[in-house]
Length: 116
Image (tube, rainbow, N blue to C red; front, side):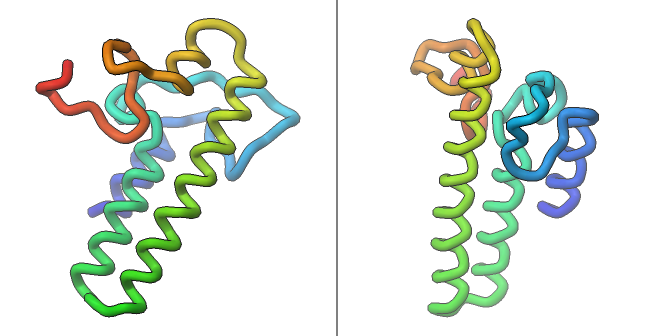
């Protein structure tokens, strides 16, 4: 299920989809679909996949995979947000990289309906 989640999020990115940070090309900030609920639905889906892996095969090795995966995803999110801040001027970039508790813009991981 989380694999489908990741594939749908990648499809929703359209022309903005890329692997890693691309310093040569600026892409549009996606705010529709699952990107309206989470700034990182692809990474969120990957985290759910890692959690599912642990629940199916609970062991010290699967805990290590989950911890390492989480750490690497956090690093990649930080790199992408720094890149977006450098390339994108104005409110859109600030809303993505520096949300406050009262900010109406999309949160990093997910928006709960009660928080709206």
